[in-house]
Every structure is written in structure tokens, then in C-alpha cells.
Image 1 (cartoon, helix red, strand yellow):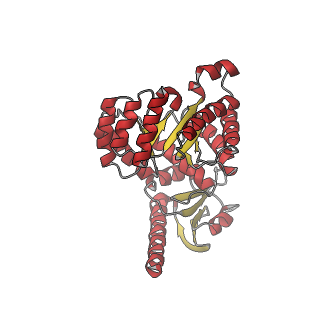
Image 2 (cartoon, rainbow, N blue to C red; image 1 turned 90 degrees about the vertical axis):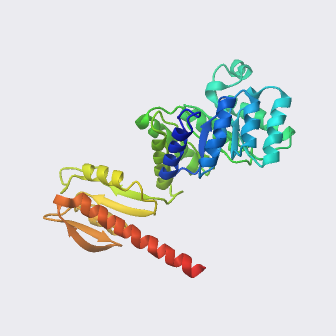
Image 3 (cartoon, rainbow, N blue to C red; image 1 turned 90 degrees about the horizontal axis):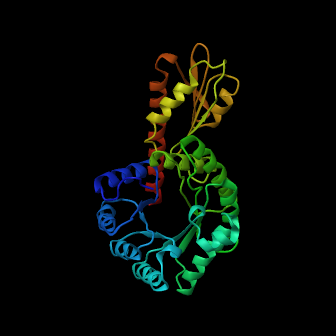
Length: 339
């Protein structure tokens, strides 16, 4: 989700492009005012990827962005207001072929549910969601997805599991307000990982108090670790110890930074010594294992070359990029033969 001022078209578009380059498939943009709705139209025209408009309270904003080509409306029918206003939004969505996301959040439950349950609970989240789902069902609008987010991992997981057993529509996963980069990454990985391992979830958002690009990076690493996505480099690296023959940590930091642009799936092992190094290196597309006096590189499971520590990062980066080029060329050949 963007965190720029939506009225600043250039800044918002720049962030959308950065998120796209990091691997985002969909980006959500907050549209809090009618002025922002007009600006959203310009942002939409400049975006290469689908945009979700995040809208609360004023149903007229939803009607306007529907006219301007939004790809999805994120609303909470409970705070849109009267039945006729919700119906107007649904009609606009139906007429323009736009799906809706029902967004339930533990921090903004309806007052009657807060009174009934005393505090946010999984049951309260699900009851809120079902209330809004019933609303759309009465309007004969099935093109929606649902989120039941909480900052508490156990609450969110329980709510999503319950909801998944009740409806067939897609679920958008998130541990909302998860925290800063480190703590939020841990909470999101645990909560979303539990659900994804259950086969629950169709889209995800990692919510961090950090640069939104970091959210995409964490999300992709999460999906890669679960083998749900294969995009970019999957690094296998040791934590390092006194046996290391090169500085594993600085090498990994440099490689991750330099190779962020690579989107081709590739397994790369970076292991500091010869205990586990050869085994891991042989299983990767390209692997480096520490050795004395030189470090040994494996390519496709076979010893290929030796690298000295003096220019280790530069030399290893070039070998990785060469392997990427070879893999891309092979993929292009397959496409040509299929056509």
C-alpha cells in the first residue's frame, strides 16, 4: 500500500513503480477525499499494475473512482452508511466490472459487536464479515473478497480459518499493524505462514511500519520459502562461525543489495566452510563454499571455478548474473519452440 500523499501524483506513481519493481502484483492507494479521487484517475492512467482504492465513509468517492477505472474497491459496508448508499456502490461496481474487498479490522469493529463481545475476538471479526457478506448477497453481488485482519496473530489466524470454512470467495490475508521491520516481519511470517500452509489465502499484504518496498520484499521471501512463488534469487546462506573462510555476512549483505533487480528464479548457496558447504552448493544452481586457500564455486552441482577473497563479491556477482543470463536464454528457447 502506498504511503505518499495521494494528491501528489508524481510521488505516488514513483512509489507504485518502486513497488512494482520489487515484485508487487497489486497496489492499494488510500482515497480519503473527492480531490484525492480526481487525482486517483491520473495515478491510474500512469500505473502499469492494478490499483485498489481504499475508501471509507463517503460512498461518492467510490462512485467516482469506479468511473475513473479503479481495479478494485476496498470498502467496509458498515461505515458507508445507509442501504441505498451501499447499493449505489455495488451498482457502480457491477456496471464497471469491479470487484469489492470487504475489509474487517479488529481496530474498527462496529460498536454493537464491541459491546456484545467486550473486546475484539475471532468470533467478532467473523460476525462482522458475515454481516457485510450477507449485505452483498442481498444485493446479488458475488464478486468480492474478504479480509479479517488483527494485530494479534492468534486472533487473525483463528478468524481466517473460521471464515474460510464458511465462504467460497477469495480471502485477502494480513496481520494488520504488525509493527516495525523486524518485529512485523516475524509476526507476519508466523501468522500468514500458518494460513498459507493450510491452503488459505489468495492475496496477501505485509503491514510494516517501514518503507512499503520492504513489505513486498518480506512478502516475496515468505512466498518463496513456502514454494508458492519462484521469482528472484533464493539464497541459502550459513549464519557463519569461526570455521568460515570468508566474511559470510558482509558477502550476503552485498549480494542481496546488488542483485535485487534479478527476477529470474535461481537458487544460490553461500556457505562459509567445507562442513556443509559442498553439499549445499551441489544442490543449488550456483553455490560457493569456503575453502583454503581459495573458495570453490559449484555450478549445476559440479565444481566450476575457484575464487579468492580479494574480489569475492564482484566475481561471485558476475558468475550469478552469467547464470541468470543462461537461464533466461534457455527459457526463451523453450518459448520459441512452443510457438
